[in-house]
Length: 425
Image (cartoon, rainbow, N blue to C red):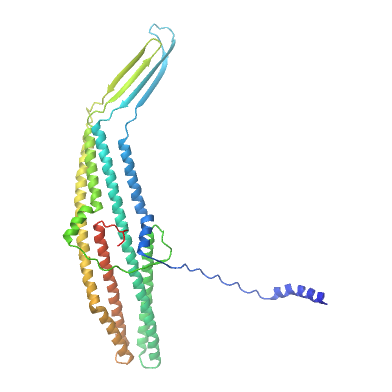
């Protein structure tokens, strides 16, 4: 009896399974990448290690260092060997062979060698200054990009808060319109303001993504795919006098030092071209051997500078010196103009920050509270609430802009003074 029941269950099982509807497979849960919080120190460490511009400048310095080895190398000797059948003067058939061997050694004058070595040394100094300039520029650009992302995050937060506030206001306006306490126009206006706020919030999030992409580019894509900047803007820096900063900048700026090294390099090339006008001798030792006689000869060959006295090369080197001097003066003017502009921006931004912190933000917040209270008691229209809210939002955004402008001007002044952006502050 028991065996029969088991057989019936085994036969009915597949049929029941075939007739039962299959349960739908559970949809895969999307994996959302965790947003990591990175600090300024972590960003700077990634930039210093993985930035492609710094890596390129480092390789260029290695190339310039290799040129010093090229400049110190001596010219190689030259060996010439020849062989042929020997025929006697009497007209008899050849009875042997003749060989010739010549060893030549170019002799480089000390003046040429010394000038070439100096030019290579100044090339290394120029590459070092260029590397330092790239190091400083990229580091301060990374600092500015990090603080820009902080600003974009704050703007996105304010935009999200505005959407939340307007959503709450829209609900209250809809309740008043349904109760007949407010005109329908106020509901339309509230919906329009909420739509505009959502659009601004989307734009703010897009700006955050752009700032994140800029930081990842500077760090050679070494930062996480999704991250947020952690920290806050530093306090206002105390700026020294403009004359003091100008003097320090002109003495330490790597752009000027690179151009100065290029100027010295072109002067060394001019000395080298002038030294090359003197003929460079070639000492040779030759040996001729045949079955009857062996000859050994010592000789010196000198090129005769009759048609080419290197006037073109000397003129080209002199023009390079004049060009280097012009570039130095132009760079000085650019640096002084950039420093003046940075000081002006810092001064203007500081005044704006003091204005906002002196009571402008509090006044805008108080005006919004008064307008909301008056609207709830029916003493003012909803349009006045929207105007007060829009004013507060504009004041907060301008305050964030002033803080960022003050910090950006300070970073620019530090860059012009060649301060190390990767050092701890």
